[in-house]
Amino acid sequence: MEKAVLKILLTFAILSVICCAFWQLRWLTSASEAAILFAITGGVIAIDFAWTFLRKSIRNRT
Image 1: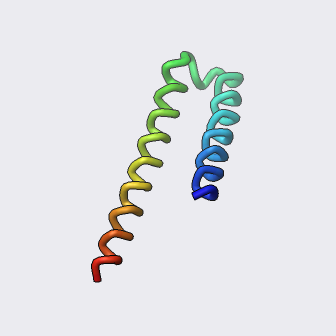
Image 2: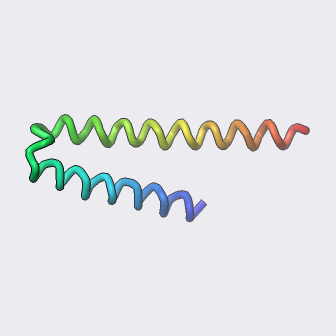
């Protein structure tokens, strides 16, 4: 579980660096665009956890 938390923190740290770079290049024009990127990332991580949990629960049944 600690590996998963570490990977999530690393993902958000990398996304923060990318957002800062895009902000400097003026590719992001508002904070809401950055917030949307973080929300999408959080959604993808949540879906990944749900899919992993579902696969493990199906495998444990058989």
